[in-house]
View 1 (spheres, rainbow, N blue to C red):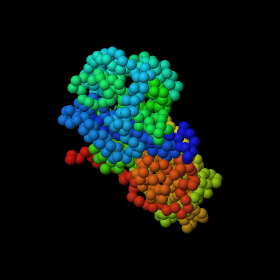
View 2 (cartoon, rainbow, N blue to C red):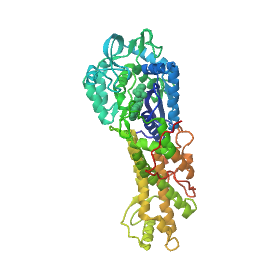
View 3 (spheres, protein in one colour):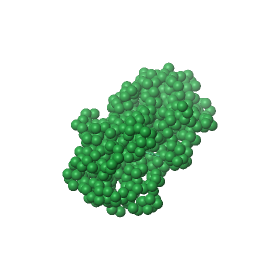
Amino acid sequence: MPSAYSPSMPTPYYITTPIYYVNDRPHIGHCYTTLLADVAARAARLIGRDVFFLTGTDEHAEKVVAKAAENGVTPQAWADRNAAAFKDAFAFMNFSNDDFIRTTEARHTSKASAYIQRLVDSGDIELGDYEGWFDASQEEYVTETVAKENDYNSPVTGKPLEKRVEQNYFFRLDKYESWLIEQIETDAIVVAPEARKNEVLGRLKGGLNKVPVSRRIKDGDADWGVVMPNDPEHRVYVWIEALCNYMTVVDTNERRKYWPATVHLMAKDITWFHAIVWPAMLKALGHAPPAMIYAHAYFIAEGRKMSKSLGNFVEIDLLRAYADRFGLDALRWFLTTQGPLGANDADFAYARFVEVYNADLANSVGNSMSRVSNMINKYFDGKITHVCNGEYGFPNGTALQIALKALDNAGKPAAEARTYHFADFTKAAVEAAIEAHARMDLGEMLSQGLSIVRHVDDFISFCAPFTLAKQLDDLDGAEDALAAILYSCAEALRIASLLLAPTMPETMADLWRRWNCAHLTDANDANAAFVAPIAELTRWAGPHGLKHGQVITKGDALFMRADGKDPAPEVKEA
Ligand code: MSP
């Protein structure tokens, strides 16, 4: 659980994504991980933490050299082109990263070299002979067992493995075996979800080998990558250098407070490097390990694994086509709530997209917000005229009793006795959302926001304010009762909007403008803090709550209903 908020010293929250290879353009997988980090970072800002959210590109891979050669350009030119494509894609997705590191930048390479030198000095990196199966497509050695299991092809890409014998520098990962087991077993380093923790522990208990850190530079090799400090004949493997990015970027006087990282986020393909190699490197360097390694599963597309050979990667242009039709926030909602956040893969499928869009957004969030704005406009000239404590029950809930009387007068079946306590309900939802955020259970965090919306819908169906509105002249206290009911709906939706904002920032900022709540944060600055931590912002009828006289403007529907019979969005050929 995040600790208590203190405005002068908010607790740092440092979240990272993998840095992505620039041999190719970004696709849904890269956007998905970065989106999760964005949602977690935005939520942490709302909770009141001092957030640093880092993403970037991993540029010194051999496959970048190969791809550049195929395309007749230098590795740097190729890296520049694709790094720009990643930056564009991330801007389109409205990510609020605080920095974007390219590993070709001097601020990274100089510090990464220094860390490696320190590891040489401490005896954690040493020279030795190495013979093994190298997976050039993944830039890593695989064990004999893995090589054999896969017929000496890459377990990830299926490309042939190469037998390499070389004199290398090695990192003495073996020294840290018992420390790692202890850290992960006790959750000093949380490896999540649970399936990943068990996998990592299982592999750890099978024993650790030294990890090759460098290879000898051969004639004709491109001048690409970090050279081994004090040994110009060796080049550092990209993985060892790349992992350092999480530290190089915050190893400055202003940013040092962000270490240790709160969450390193990634997919399960690279859990090993993050949960084992990196914490051991940090230990050897004398730094605290990250608090959490979170490795989600994979997106597949329309029921099939995405692969180069099938040519079915969900590319950025397709994501743009979805955003054009449904809105970017709807795309962000779908990816966050339906994606492979846990241990199971998830499908990016059009039919499912429409179903979720209609159920969660058009029919729930959007509809509820419009309905309540419309009623406040129709019955109260678009103003809040009554502030109440959100408590409706028997026998004291006068507003509800009057509403039920109205239903009775209208000949509608008498509703069963129910208790609604919005202040308690919303408080519990906010607390559960904060708790889910700490576990990186972002789906649960968002479902707490949606549960408030559904509670409002349920309350509206139960007490039927539109029926009550027809009897304003005939029923004593009807007007106050109606105003109280609508206040409760609007205030509850305001609280829901805060919980939904991390994944739908633009749409919720739009609602805040309509409802005159825009002062809560600077909608034009995604990295800005809110005026108060979430516990204050969401206090029922509190200092940031809807006030007497507050203007609630009507507007267009936030989400138009979608027709699943329309053909799926497609990439328009240029
Ligand atoms: N450069 C390394 C990471 C170094 S971090 C110090 C790398 N790069 S990568 O470009 O291959 O990105 C892998 C990451 O992309 C995965 O861990 C995941 O975050 C994301 N994804 C790639 N394909 C994905 C899916 N199909 N589904 C979900 N995420 C995926 O590995």
